[in-house]
Image (cartoon, rainbow, N blue to C red; front, side):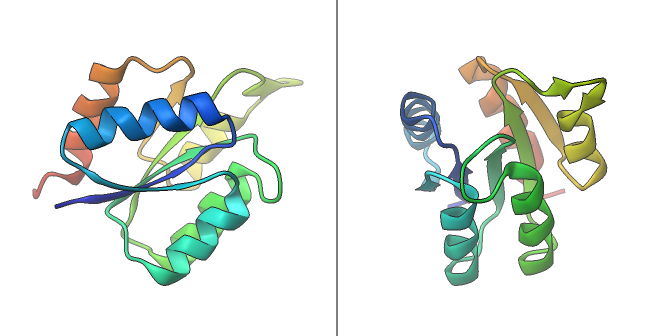
Length: 124
């Protein structure tokens, strides 16, 4: 069973992502910030990580860079609830340049998320 890590500081968003993924049969872990997420990545292998860009302790950009060093083959989906473009700098675009396979603006359509997750973790 594929294992997914969710790094999201907003409780309702995190719980919604967990419910969506678990109801589809995925094994999930959740972290309230990037530092917790990286600690989990040091202990467990993941097939995919969903990482919010703006979080306390360690933001999503730093978490993506560190996660890729720990688990280079992991697929990453970057998400942001707004403020992804600040002073003409697009954080989601930057996340993609760092290795995020897909980016979403919140709110995220659950079926679209499941379709992308399935496509990213299916054996090629």
